[in-house]
Length: 494
Image 1 (cartoon, one colour):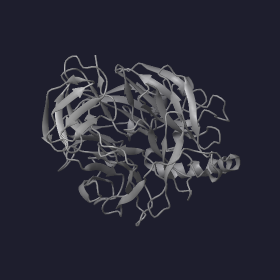
Image 2 (cartoon, one colour):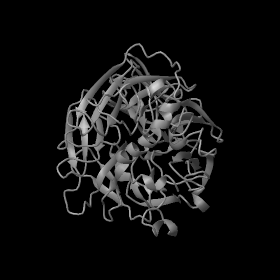
Image 3 (cartoon, helix red, strand yellow):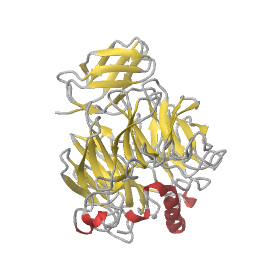
């Protein structure tokens, strides 16, 4: 494989820098000028946190909103023992260190923490890329205070180096991915592995659903960076490498572990006009999936793709369309669906200062650069974005800022407040947390128009039960000041 082995999970930044150098000259040489959409009426960017080692360093994923309206996240390094931290941050950027990993020899609690997921029980569930009983990473539960509970330690045969958010279905199991590992003999023999998809319950029982590279020459793909997308009871994901041209794949996997490869990138290697090294996908409001490719596309600088559920792929935007790649270069963090139906994400390189950007792209492929980093506010953003229920986006840079150890930033373009649910899918009767702001005095909660029983817990949290007769669609909360609609459809499972 030409890609999978180049990106050890603990050295993503260094690897990305190398890859950027490899293809930047080609991208710059072929770049053309072109027009992109006008920017939103207001763009407000703030550096909220400058990491400095003691409070964390090298964050890899953006923080997510908790039940109290604050943001919770991790930094891969730093803290009391230099092995990463869990933190709480107010929307204005006041940071509180909640836990430092690796207080004991051997890092039995894990090290190099990745993304957090808010569970339906109100606890946070997360992963570490390293540490644990065998040194290959962990899955943990964190109440928001005290010491995390290690639910599972990976042993390489069941996966290695999980990094991104797990997805919970209903109030039950979580589904996640590992970049390395697996039980295939040819993978274990070389001490690496090709990655897995796993299922784990809140008690820590883990089941490996699929080992990648199961097909000859890794035709089914290898190595997964991003979390899974859920649609109609199945999961969709991307492998960084593998496939017939080793440019990565998009796959569908059932909860029972049956995998189907939907699309293989870089079929016209070495040109890779459809992209190379995909990240994503995410489900759009039109029922199609959207994601990014780190390399390839028209100028070998990465692109944004759209794919139907049956596997028809279209590149809707190629980066480095503008002279000097001021529109960005090498999207390394994937994209998220914003509450306005557009997609948002970072590019690792490019922009006015060649140190990365944040962009908006419509489903039709019209791209707007929202911010170009200059180093003082961080640079080389990875890990994607998150969106708080106030409408504000949050993201991280792994390096740069006042101390060079990375930053947390916010970006507002004037989007309206909304509500979001945890989990994003469940059967009738599932208990759901609804996050928002100014929720006190709420008079109704509906799931795609069907009234639900609910309880107002605080100004930032409502609990509700998926009502009988509910179908997939938006969740709406009616308050004294108006209606708030969920940013994504809640999926009602059979």
